[in-house]
Image (cartoon, rainbow, N blue to C red; front, side, top):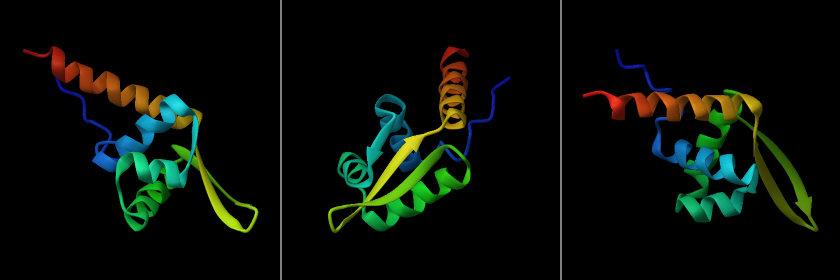
Length: 95
């Protein structure tokens, strides 16, 4: 039987954010925006959904006078991502 894929991670942009953070552990908003080629507004909404789910933490600070947003994957986010990949793999192994 197929497992349900996590609908939060099944979104292309949210999955891209998690994929970046799973390897980088943390990344600045601007870096994520550039890597995903998304708009700042759309990325902000998707990051907030991941934060609300507890998959990432978001820290807002300043570098000089410039605002800086840093995203970090949480242990819950790592577990959710690993389960998503495992569940996706189960689809690939079914015949």
